[in-house]
Image (cartoon, rainbow, N blue to C red; front, side, top):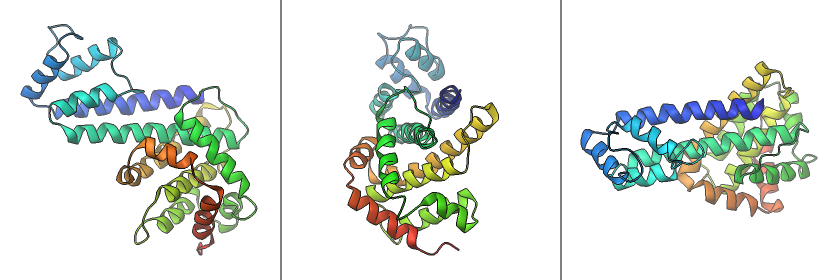
Amino acid sequence: MTAIFMTETLQLIYRALLVQIARNLDKEQQKELQFLCARLVPRRVKKALTLFLSLEDAAKMSWANVTFLKELLRNVGREDLVVKLTEFEMKRDLSILLSFYVKKRNGLDSFYQSSATNAAEYLVQLMKGFQRRVDVREMLRSSGKKPKDLWLHFVSECILPRRMTWGKLSMLVAVGGEIIAVSSSFSERPEEVEEVMKICIQLADDLCHPMLQLGTWVCFKLCTIGLSETHFSRILIISGNHRIG
């Protein structure tokens, strides 16, 4: 149920982005795309959306893989649209990461494996190791804050004037997962699953901009897996010990 809802939601976001991209391509750029894909799609294909559907049928692009579409847009000089697809990739992978993190923290395993779930697994283990020193769950209960407000507190401690780093971003992802996990039972009731998934996607959206400023999803994954316990602990304690009022 969880995976189905997440997939359907991300597919809808992806398709809405394709509509936006199609609207932003002029006739000349659409002709150039058609030429680049001449051996992949029928000659009768003229419009951008029809071209995208044909590329999906040819297994050249999907909500899970927009690499080929990014290369096409780069070749027709639309780097701005490439950035939008990169933002979608980050939001997609962060949403999956947070969803898996929450499931793991609530004792629910997933058979699905990806770079996002591997990063989530590592962050779960780091947070478990620091629970006695900085317990985000207890912080949420004792502060009386709403989950979103506690999340914003941690965000405020990591952004300017302090410089955002990969370590801080990894900590924010883990804290977001902790807050979602403790504020939800994560049952399999459709309405509760939908609400949790919406929160995961919302927090993922919040994290996209700082991640895009730092680099790529691959950089985040490598830095997260390589994050030492000492470094992560220092970041978490400094951010968590600031007054929450």
